[in-house]
Image 1 (spheres, rainbow, N blue to C red):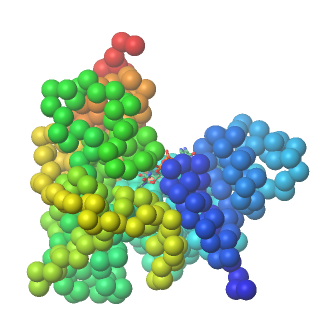
Image 2: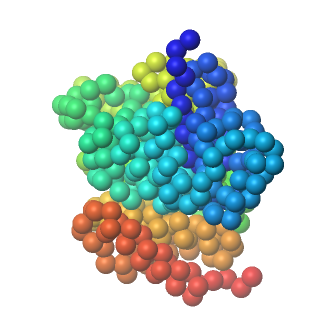
Length: 399
Ligand code: NAD
Ligand code: MG
């Protein structure tokens, strides 16, 4: 039997983490779990350790890591337990893991994901915020260290599948690409009366019509900030000029994205909205692997619809394009402000419509560095969080 490929899963207790483990356990002859990491959910990571027997388990929270260590010791398991960012970076660079699933949510994923790139891993990138914050730096690390970058975000995975294998070397123009068409469902409020948006509750924002996801990305989908982050992600991932990236609203989430070529051809990738398809694709690339996803039934599908995005309804999409235009640390500032605002909305401290307002104020107030080095990015992130925190406190609703 050939050697099994070790996989480290950063963010294993989340939605992408669970889908990744689901695909891996279908192929025990090909893969083994080398590392599992999470924020502070001791119980969830403990159960995963019993099932998957990784070499290393990491909790970002040090107290939680200590509790996990004790539980594993008591159960007689020999799993090395580490804590903090250093622990996450250790998991991301483990010699036993050739593949790293980067599925931490938000800016917290940046350093470990970057560490995986620098260690020359096959990086399965779900953590789009890392690329939004540090696109040029991250892409340079991938190239310099001979790492492989496979997009997990369904749109980018679809685009990747619709591009020829040499696109990264040749460039999009040379391979005849005219536009990248990123599809997005428009989320749960695509047709809701605009006047109601100020009153929507977190549960409504998290109830996505087609996808089941973590809470942060669910809210991002409802504001369409998710699509804005994905435009920035596509810009770096495919070296695509901003003018060559277009967002198309497609409520059924069956076409996951498209690439238009100079000759008028449009290639699309279709499938049921289930993240196990892009995960299996990235694990098996350039081959294919059974994922457990139900196959499409076109007769049942019936109709596929398309619309232009409504920027008045979704101001976050406009703000993301604006941040990309400014460049430097501006996308990191946008991302940090959005993370703060989404958390405040989930905590019922601000209204849904305040999310875009917070992001817009922060983008206006924080003077962004044109430099794109890690120090400038982390500084932009911190300052944006401080400014956002002040606005949120000033606007906080009575609870
Ligand atoms: P989730 O909230 O379900 O899971 C997040 C994971 O990250 C958990 O394991 C959590 O413990 C861990 N985590 C959170 N904060 C952390 C911290 N400070 N330090 C260390 N670990 C931390 O999120 P998700 O929906 O699985 O999304 C993960 C990433 O994948 C996000 O960047 C999201 O945008 C992206 N993504 C998700 C989907 C989806 O369908 N869920 C689709 C495309 C892209
Ligand atoms: Mg996506």
